[in-house]
Length: 411
Image (cartoon, rainbow, N blue to C red; front, side, top):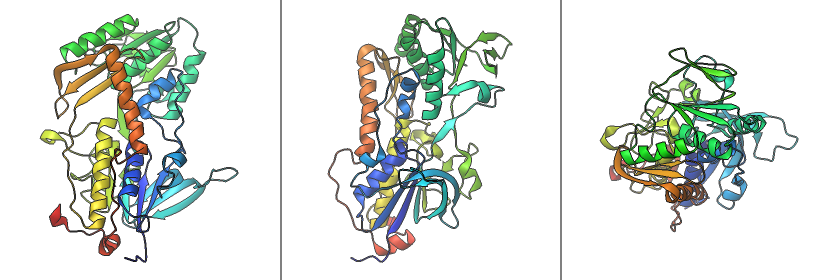
């Protein structure tokens, strides 16, 4: 079948979800039928789940997209997305383009699309706390992790590090820093009890590891202000902090707010079970940028564990609609929460489908190995987006390539 024009698929963001979706689409569809462009500001894949390791001084293996997508037909466009026009179906990108950037100035260009995959993820959320944006360090990006790494390297023995936030990121950051730099005085500030979402076994192990590393824990404590040398709690207590690490949560990037896409109050794009925008059917959103519902109609949490199956679902749905085949819908659910507690300890908390802790948990060295395998598997999955299974590329149906229509009754 001859096609006069390729169906243009533009994927915004090359984190776990965007990179995985682009690669999976390339292996589902014929290259003659589709042009897949992946837009990202960096030429290398960033393992976000390892940024606490990078900040603590460890080296991470480079993962260039040029190698990961070699021979797939996915075109990498280096640049920052500055605007999305869902009515004109264009994306504005500022950057050096597809080359190596050597000697090239920043260019601005509009990329037209027929199908858009919005996977721009999230950044850190300072919560509007005075001084946080100015004085605290974040761990949601590679540049942020590198800045924290530089600051920690410059700290002398006996100096203080305060990690604000008792969630997964805060726990991993505090334990990694304390293990790597036992000469520092590390503290963790949590709004609730330490690990209050865990099972009794999980909480007991977490407490044992934290105490063993000498981490001071301030439970049921909120931070009201951050200064260059301290944080101030809600009751006015100052806590000395040569370095403050802010890990209280993530916020989606505000780019979507300037579009006509239907959003939640938090700025996430509202999608259906196939990750398709409920207001614009030629737009799919995955990862932290999207609000999808899981078991019991509970919103899925921002995490790699959520984003990866969302990417699979979106890529498979797009491919099915373009080829006129049945649209798969696999319910999204959780199985576990994986926490590294330094390089020697870990915690695998098994959970219900809707992410509530059960009694079963894996702890200790075995859990650390398990978590490491999960991290390696996530990175491997980006480079092998069909999970290692053989894939038969399908031809795009002409009417679907032009209009995005398909036999929805088959879905």
